[in-house]
Image 1 (cartoon, rainbow, N blue to C red):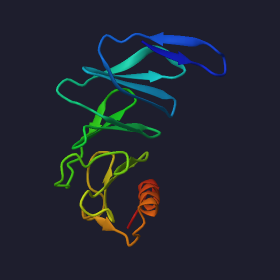
Image 2: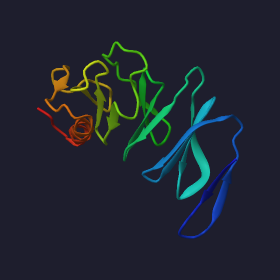
Image 3: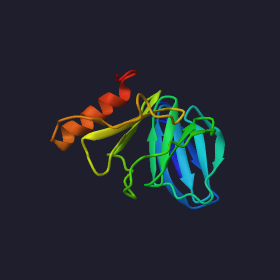
Length: 164
């Protein structure tokens, strides 16, 4: 059971799940709940009727939300979904290292996905929301050695509409 409290109205809603809770995230007006078998997307203004999508045979452990879309990952692959529960894309990643996708290596904006290379933290691959590589399809590199600055550059790059 998940209890959701509205801080403005002090109303509380209860969400009962049939399956085991795996992960949840709140952002951009939506509550995303992942169970062992399905994903549920609740509009925070109206929790009554969630959008549902199937998660059978997938073990997602990461949710990253953006304004129009959200990203799910099992640590190796990523999937982009709309808030209506529709699978938008599953970009083909170029990293050869398994379990390389985490909150520090992936970011999403309304139109761009950025994935930092697991073997070279100065290199970032960009995809459009449909999963196609942006530009020439090669990694974009920068010269910053500091990991915190690298993360800031990563987020800024992801927010850019054009990088070349």
